[in-house]
Amino acid sequence: GRLKQGLEKTRKGITEKVDTILKSYQKIDEELFEELEEVLITADMGVNTTMRIIEDLKDKVKEKKIKEVFEIRELLKEELKEILTDVESDNKINIEPSPAIILVVGVNGVGKTTTIGKLAYRLKKEGKKVLIAAGDTFRAAAIDQLQEWANRAGVEIIAHKEGSDPAAVIFDGIQAAKARKADVLICDTAGRLHNKKNLMNELNKIFRIVEREFSEATREVLLVVDATTGQNAIMQAKVFKEACDITGIVLTKLDGTAKGGVVLAVQSELNVPVKLVGVGERIEDLQDFDPQNFVEAIFA
Ligand code: GDP
Image: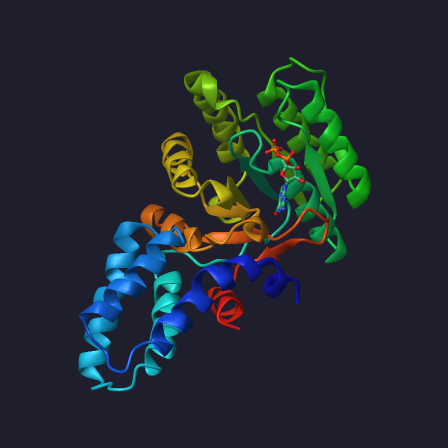
């Protein structure tokens, strides 16, 4: 399906290379592990995660007394699944009971607006009443673009003028969501990282309002990062994690990179679950992140 298609480049970048390596070895030795290590690092899994994978693989080979090179493939799949499920909270979005709020944060250009549109569309299709709040008041274009996505998704949007107080927009959104009995309020926020201190103060202010109005069970703070930016995405995630309590990560543009291994790096380095992945520009191209399906799709 869509996921497999979206992960085509990553499948080539990881699995095809792994298969080629495995075919060229007669027995399992140190050199083989070194070659595998290189593939994983090139796929942006991060040095720490890669080391852990390779060490675990070696242990398993010993433990299970594995002799055949081809058996490494299954072991590697198993290992990736294990690492992807080794995170404190699960990969599901929390929007029960309603009304719930989803705060969407991230740097400009990563795909925040697109993700909000796709998510609104999806939730609406699932029968939810969705409302969007245009909390990026810094750029007029951001408000217009979000309006377009809201139209496409067929949901209502709360927006103020460019330059108005973002926290006031979010506050209005919350009141409107309650008055209109919406199930989910999705809030956009600004992403101008060049003015980091102001941005983080702004997010903090919004976050405090959200905390006051919604219980932990009914609020999600999703950080959107661009998979094609690799280790940069991880740096950004660390900055945002300091400013607000990120509950999940959305990894966009996975279709545009062979380095989908960044999913593992971002999740294990931040200990925050990846909850959604963007696999294309169309409104349907947003998928729940499921570790089993993800690994199966890249090894398909
Ligand atoms: P924002 O500045 O963070 O709001 O970013 P936008 O939502 O405007 O997206 C920036 C660009 O990334 C647009 O051209 C989108 O079409 C593109 N984009 C967003 N998500 C994806 C994705 O999952 N796959 C691909 N290929 N492009 C995406």
